[in-house]
Length: 116
Length: 114
Image (tube, rainbow over all chains, first blue to last red; front, side, top):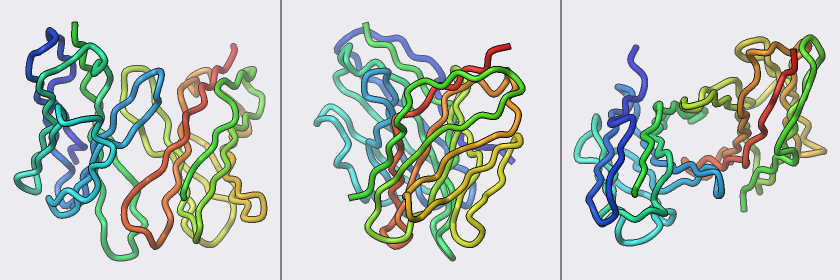
């Protein structure tokens, strides 16, 4: 089975440009999470969705960041305009929330963003 | 509030020796506890979880973890370390009754010395 698929794996852009990161969760999973990982701050939850609906976006750093989940199989994280401090690895994760609700998170391989 | 502490940023162990990576947690209700491993330039991979039942949980790659409710700990262990176990390890907790959010520790970098 395919895992969580993220694209692009690497992105290098210049300050002020728009960046769009993409995620395809595991089929059948109904919760999707976006995390950011940096050396300084570790792993931070940015936002998560249940059944395509954003539930908690309190981790989104500022209005430059936005996330959407138009359907159960696709989500985007957009940064506009990008800044050098946004440089990080961005992870998407998914899980099935239901039944006994004991399922773990499954992570993608990450998108490494460098903003010059 | 839920939280996880991994008190050691770095753990070094000789190949063949037992290893322990420590984790303590704080939740207001019953915890679900998880361990993940991250190899360089990769995503986090699930190792094992404690939900209920036996306090000793066995997972992938020969790892196990022991849930200790009185000490609010969930330490990761392996009887004999391999060089290939060198990686970053994350502990996470989720409270059973509060939705969907996982709380991760800051990670422990494990180096197994040949």
